[in-house]
Length: 336
Image 1 (cartoon, rainbow, N blue to C red):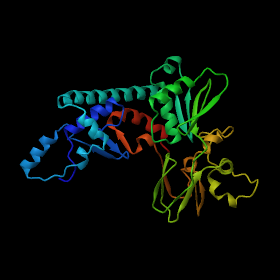
Image 2: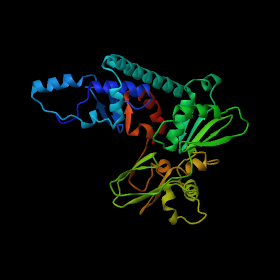
Image 3: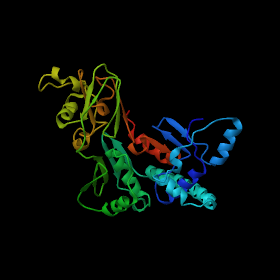
Image 4: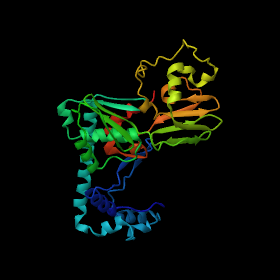
């Protein structure tokens, strides 16, 4: 056995870190939304584990940082007395239960709201007053701001409080502000979010490479040549709406020529009043075969690419306690 031993010290760390609002080792988590991580030994004391290993004749390696006072977790551990272990463990269990209950409450609220996410824009229709007063409503608004902006972190409680004070759905005029990489527009009809038009970088994706672009899209290049990805621009978007599925080969279409066999976009995007600010946050892929905007033309892309919308705060590691919330949010961001 070559892994570092962790036991009663974990109980100390978890209880204190939960009290202070910091991160905590979870008993069960999901890595990259695919690999399930289970830590079955969190409740076992190190002395008990060592005794078992000795009995079985198994050698181990102690983590040298367990006793290194340069690390905060070690200093916190030393500040907790041995007699407090059971109390700390109880706090850990209570905190985990509260988190699961809160995640379920937020999930239920999201299902009660009228929310649409499509083509770079999220819209929450103005809810009934009792839903606006729901204690979880600021969190939902902050959550979708973070998801649309591609930020890897959820909003802190102070920012949620400031957000709640700022929103006024009774305003006769639309108002805007930016938060967590999103531009938020609100008024009497509801709240709209889209990625603000700054700090969106171009990138080169090599053949066979999977690249996380702008914290929002995971793009895999299945071509033999490299592809460039950047934010969609107004010129190409207008060409897309004009030529439909022939968009990537518009160089063969005569100027002013009308194409009869077009993709029916009226069911997708309002062609009379397309929301170009949000459409310009979509990824545009350029390569030898032409140009694609995969989220709009996924059924007729000229390049072989796989595009997946990422939920940045939950993409790397998500806790079992948050499962109810994530399961409700994920379908909003499926690219079909």
